[in-house]
Image (cartoon, rainbow, N blue to C red; front, side, top):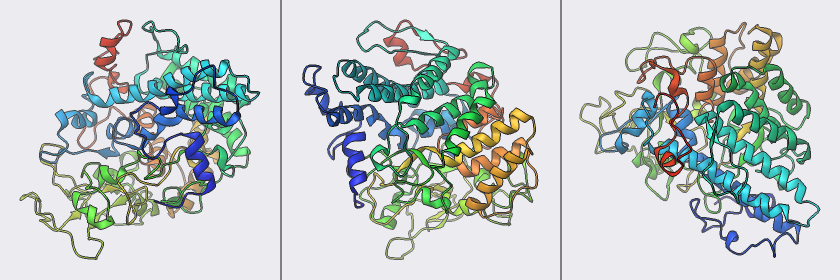
Length: 535
């Protein structure tokens, strides 16, 4: 494992409270020993207990909910069925084709992920309400804002969900409509944000916790998507939240795009809120397992065999090639042959960081060969990742698809990676301001918008600036910067293209798929829930 600094250690011990032997699906051991009678004597006790509300966040970087719900449903990412692998009852295919159903596991995992955090927040709020510590009020505000962010994700994924704020109330909760959930999230954040500490990346003791700027970032994202959630856009509010973060002077673009995603990325100047992963003490981020081939175990000397699943869709991979000179729909490159090999042009630097393609080798330099390669695969046994995927199912070639290497792979990594995951990143806040400004002024070539986009494009992408923008070219640039960071689904919905056709996805007949079905297990457990329309 990587060396842990005092700062990192304090995060792991206090902010997230996950020991080396703690599993994500286990109840924190601390709950069994703390009671209202013996808790709250010291600030350290409070900080340690509050850390349990953050524990579910360790699931963010896995393949169970947030990544597949927000990426595999889009034109950025796909999990092809490779023969017997990744069949799983067809639910990966249903995510990509927008034919998901209430019995699918991934929406249910997302529901449980959010409500696990909410339930813990509610339980801790009762305990803190009885604390005599002078700092208890600040922790109460922190928990309420964290709970609001869990509800923001539910709002985005399911629309109509129960609002539960009282842990002692055991009655099945009633469902609230999407506008009511939006209003709750907004009020909780705005009522409590001023009580949160003002810290940026330079303060390690609050790294991974909800600070004032985390709450502002959550509000910025809430307001950016307000039109989707309530029918009433809130562009100026989104701008105001972004300006508060920008004008703080606490954040800046990383000099190199890749700096945000390397192994030792703790404290990146772009990280407003991050999950501090560690392969031994803070597990849960396993992108290496999700995307790499079985044979890549010997490339990186991983302690387990990868699963050969997640890849990007060819056209999205190609969108990083010369997008200014050859713009197609959503800024994608046109004129590709079936194998995607015919287009040349300036390469965006983010392309090399984000994807792994080409011949694959073992750590000793020898060429890897897949004895199980499909007989119809023209590349044969020598393992070569290609952007082209022959089909979504049932027999996608085992080595087809550009693999997702945005978070740096490294020799000797474990199946759980050390790279921290940014939930809110400064580049996203800049792009949120750029978009909200363009929409507020009805001008995609507003000087503010164009300047922000070109700053990110030139500094992170290393390609020529845009002379002008359209909604399509803006969205394509946003996608190149924010690839795989779980925003593509809401971005596509906001721009009105989530229901369009792309490779492996025919146009949706109805927009009911823009939110997921209420999981059947939740309907069975709570008679007050009703299914979302269309399911």
